[in-house]
Each structure stands twice: as C-alpha cells, then as structure tokens.
Picture (tube, rainbow, N blue to C red):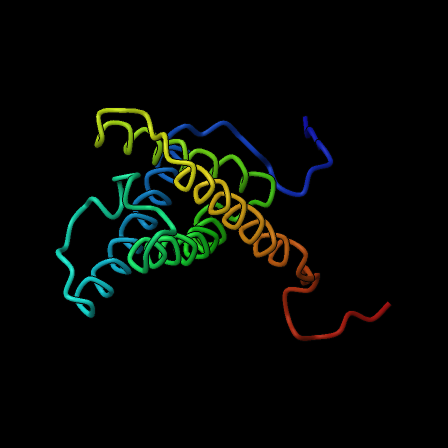
Length: 160
C-alpha cells in the first residue's frame, strides 16, 4: 500500500544525522573563528590564545582589540550561515541549529571561565551573531529550496 503524505521531502527521525550535523556545524564555526583569530593575532603580533574565543571578558567595545574580536565573531556568523546552507539544507531547521550552536558555545564559555558569562557585550554579540546566522542561513536555504525542479530526465521534448 502506497502512503502519499503530500510532502516534498520525506522527513524521518535520524538522530545520527542530526548529531553529525550539530558536530559539523560547531566544528566549522570554531575552526573558522580560530582561523580569523590566528590571522589577526599574527598580523597584530598578539598572543594566540583560546581566551579570544571563550573568555567573555575579551568581548568589549572599550578598545580596538575588543572591537576586532566582535568583528571576527560577526564574520563568523556568516560562516555559520553558509555551514547551515551546506550541511543542514533545510530552511525550517536553520533556527534550531543556530540556537544549538550558540547554546553549545554558551556551555563551552561557562566551562572555560568557571562562571556564567555576565558581560552585556558578550550577550549582545551572541544574540546578534545568532540572528545573523539564522536569518542568512534561512535565506540561503530558501533560495536553494525554491529553485525550479526539472521535470524531464532528458533533453528531448515530449510530444502530446
């Protein structure tokens, strides 16, 4: 018996796929953020440290260094959007994966610092980063999902 559900794509619960996508998105985001920080630290002769990624006190607008870290996090939000487009490929899942990535980052920062992030700048940056990642990821996925679906399998015309 054929069960037609009326959906374009069949969705099934696949925890291995979901966990793999979460790990992949998180890994890409941290690798790219580390790459941005490595480039800037090399150019400006800063010490290369995980503090720039996980230390919430490093994110501030008081000086050029803090502002530069904010710029790197914002650029990385666009990288996260492309990761969602490339790995998740579903518009309606972008918000879930973006929130998951930022919640994992919160937990990592909490573990790294030994205390809950209390910096207003850290919270604002992460909310802005989450918004950019979610909206841009949804935009990219939607553009892909709305592309025309080819109906013929070959280049010959079908005569009616």
